[in-house]
Length: 204
Image (tube, rainbow, N blue to C red):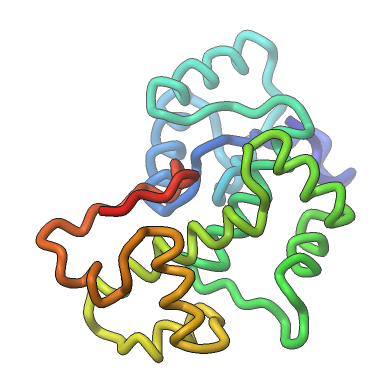
């Protein structure tokens, strides 16, 4: 928990793990409001309360969040990891754009406000995969989603997800899933993973 600026010293900001989609925002907002707290703002991974809270209230919120599959983050490193994951999710699944001529490592460093080498080391040592691998896993999961929708060609999907070519997308897809995009589309059961638990690739 921290204070984002000096203009509102009564604001309490809670950082929350696994809060990675619009449904998550809805659930967290409803559950915290039920406890009687006034929410000033809410976004992916973060909730701002209108007033400071005591230790007992922190424990109460943490308990309710855990009952719903979320976790209150209290230490700085955990919050950084959560921010990295959220920026990946925004970029891959929610259409967040990166400024022209800026690669993802520069972008993530700019968004978090930390040197990328530090972020990369922290993420790898904590999560067990590199930021690059985490990004790839999310890109492949997004490709799966778009393939199932069957509204875009593979060339259009490659362009949307910033692949240099269809061949590059197909190679990365097969390396990750064990199947080509065409083979995946033919499956009767297209199994996918939730984006808040996306660490290990599955074949089916």
